[in-house]
Amino acid sequence: MVRHLVEQGWLSERKACRVIGVSRTGIRHESLKPAKDQLLKEALLQKATQYPRYGYLMLQGLLKQEGLFINRKRTYRLYTACSLQVRTKKRKKLAGGRRLRVLSVVDDFTRECIGQLTDLSISGQWVAQFLNQLIASRGKPRSITCDNGTEFTSKAMFFWSKDHRVRLQFIQPVKPTQNAFVESLNGKFRDRCVNQYGFRSLDEAKQVIDEWRMDYNEIRPHSSLGYQPPNVLTRAVT
Image (cartoon, rainbow, N blue to C red):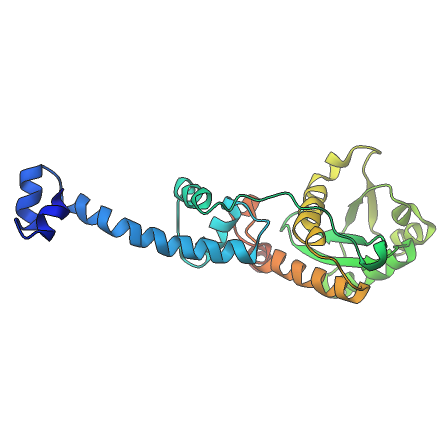
């Protein structure tokens, strides 16, 4: 009503607000809100297009990194208004239907994915060589928590553990919750990387997975880290 009176030239904004009994601050806030919502919608759509498997809290974390702070309720309102809800997608395979295996090595403290060994099959000897590469650049851990896969229970890993004095801490069979963070990471990795692509070759798979890991460590917000990427914490402790 105030806007109508002002636009028709019948009253000034001050007098119109006095007659109607509303605050001028409130009127100006309402007039600015649609324009601001449009800017936030455009930013949200841009991030949702770039990261199609992210929910509204993850997208909000990305926007917050760029200085666009939105509270959760407002983010969810814009998220649903734009119909950005994540949809289930069918899993895609490597060219020729071959099985792709990926071993992820993570730091439980910083949540950083230190490395990923990708191949059609992974032996204990390959795991040992891969861990040697990581130790050369990141240092040696005191222990490694792993499942009971044949690549970890092999003779190659037994001797590697003994030679490097690194304890292999095996979880109990059929109890993946004892290594819950890695299980959670693997689920996100399958959903947001592997299942999104139909890899034409092993080399292409390795390239895409390397890019995903860089994004995971340097950009992706983590709820357990206050919606900051792991590298923020890694830099703080090194």
